[in-house]
Amino acid sequence: MYLVVGLGNPGAEYEHTRHNAGFDTLDVIADEVGARYWKTECGALTAKGVYRDEDLVLAKPQSYMNTSGGPVKQLMNAYGVDPDHVIVIHDELDIAPDAVRVKFGGGHAGHNGLRSICDKLGTRDWYRVRVGIGRPPGRMPVVDWVLSRPRKEGLEDFEYATNRGAQATLSLIADGLEKTQQAFN
Image 1 (tube, rainbow, N blue to C red):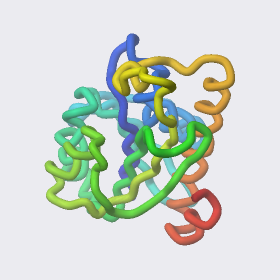
Image 2: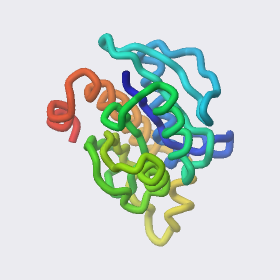
Image 3: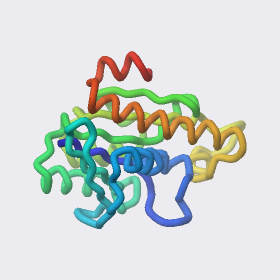
Image 4: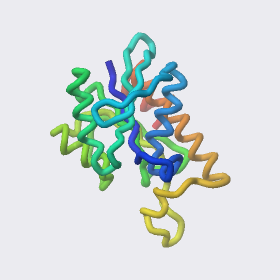
C-alpha cells in the first residue's frame, strides 16, 4: 500500500493556485485510478484506489500547508504505512513551470509543508514528486506568486506539469525510482 499525499491549502480561495499543485496532481491521479469517493479522516480528505495491483490511499491534508505533517503521520499510523511507501506531491519554485522531478529523501529547501512532514515523521526518507511552478517574475513576492492562479500560457504549463506529476507518481509506484527518474527528471 502507498500513501500518496498532495500538498495544498484547503478552501475555495486557494483552488488551482500554484501552491496547490499537489492537490491538482492528486485529482488527476484519482481520475486515473478510479478513486471517486472522498471522505474526511485523520485531518485529510482521502480516497482509495488501485494501480497495478497496489492499493493506494490518496490524501489531501485539510490543515494548512504549514501543518501538513500531522495528518500525514496520522494516516501513516491508521493504515500502517512506512515512510518508504509515502509519496508527497508538492509545488517547487526551483523547477521550471512545465517540469517535474522525482526523488527519495532530502531536505525541505524552505518549503514549510515539507518541513512539517519531516518534523512529524522524524525522518526525511520518503518519496517526493516535485511539480515545477518556477520563480515569480521581477520583484513579485514569492507568497503572491505561489498563492496566485496561473493564467494564459502559464496555465498550460501548470496543467502540463500536474498531469506529468500524476504520470510520474504512477510510474514510481509501478516501475520504481530509477526508471521513473530516467523517464521524468
